[in-house]
Length: 318
Image (cartoon, rainbow, N blue to C red):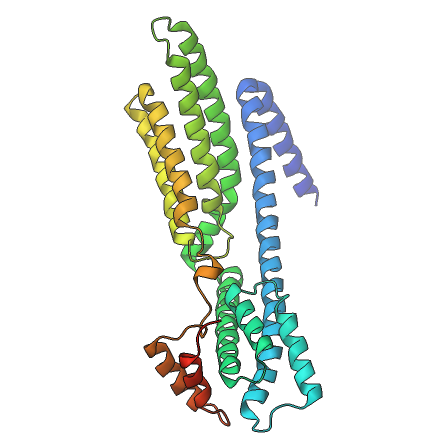
């Protein structure tokens, strides 16, 4: 124990002597080390919290889905149908599914359609397929999340450590960018022959700052994958790479900033989801191949009649 105390004491005295010997460097390095340690630890805690929150939401959604699936399977497999009490329980479980954290628009539409036509076997089969598909998707997402958190691979382990250091890298980049901007602004004020120098400096600063703000969230990760995630990621990369065009010259700064803004605005056009009214849910309007596939699947279910699917083809849409 005394040896440990002696080693700690010697280390502290050496650290204090180093601070006294290299005062200018210590003023910069010592706070940087403290900020790095604080942000690294905060990033790890924030990541663990996000994972726990997502797992909790996935667990609650799967509980509601599986409970409703069991009742739907009983109704699909029963020739006489469910009793009044069982049917009321099924309705309660379906309504509970509408409050699931990760419920989708397709499932909400199928539940609403089934509530309108509760005795329609076609609606029942479509709702059952939709909720089973959503359950499998959430189970895959939960498995992937647990695998990354508890059994990460070698590459993913290294990338996680890099991600925890990204907040400090972002802070350091922002600090260097501000210093660069202030120095460039002083030089621009001394350039009497260049009347647009101030505009160029401001454009370059805003462009680089915009690149950091856009690229940083996608490098941090932690988001759920959507249909437009890949497009958003490529747009963020394109905005970040566009900042490299500043090496061509200061006079190109307004054009680079304009290009980045156009790329950013294009994300609203190409990444937005299609309105619900323009894309009716599966089973609302049948094509020939969809109807044939639906009839094959309905045939596999016991006690279901085939004429309901044929009637839905000939009936006009509501």
